[in-house]
Structures are given as structure tokens and as C-alpha cells.
Length: 150
Image (cartoon, rainbow, N blue to C red; front, side, top):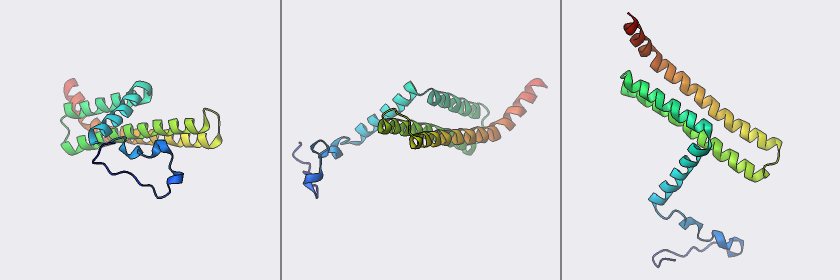
């Protein structure tokens, strides 16, 4: 252990597992923390089809907002709602993984409830994002389409 770091002194040494004694040192600096977060995003993108779909739809919505030259505040709202969907998808993936670990891939009614509620949170956030993007993007898109067909 480096010389300048304090030695942890748990209040009940008999209860501390040896492997967890220095667990607070796992992400010793901010860059390591960002690396772990990026690993989570990469995992979700590589393994979760819905995460990739949500990324694509979010990029499409932001692309349309930029193309239609929406006001910055409206672009921010679209970006925030798209980001919320991605956050909910990441939390859903984490909850599903922890539930699978806890029940060891067997069926349990409470595991089903946890997984269904996490999936419902993603669905609700996605529906809100579609509603927000539709309200903000559709009017200028319809004006553009009318001007092209006129």
C-alpha cells in the first residue's frame, strides 16, 4: 500500500471481510471512475438491443432538432429527455443483472415484479421522450414539408 494513504481502521475488525478491507481504494482517482462508467455504457451498448435503439432514436431526434434549427431550449429538452431514457435503460440493465444474481436465474415472483417495474420505467420515459420530441419537432417539420410540396 502507498505510504501516504491512511490505513483503514474499521470499528469492528471481526466483522470486516479481508477482501473488502481496502475496497474504498478501487477507484483511487477520477479517471478510473470514468473508465468504470464507460465500461457500463459499452456493456449496455454491446449487449442491450433496446439501448442501441434508444441511442439511435435520440440521435435522430437531436439531428432533426439541429436540422430544423429549433431554439436551444427546445434542443436541450429533447436532449434531456433522450438522456433520461438512456439512464433508465442503464438502470434497468443493472436491476435485471442484480436480480438475476440474487435469484440465480430461477423464477421468483418478487424478481419478476422488480424486473417488470424497471422495464416499465424505461417504457414510461421512452413514451414521454417521444411525446416531447413530437410536440417540439412536428410543427416545424410540417411547415418544412408544406413549403417543399407547395
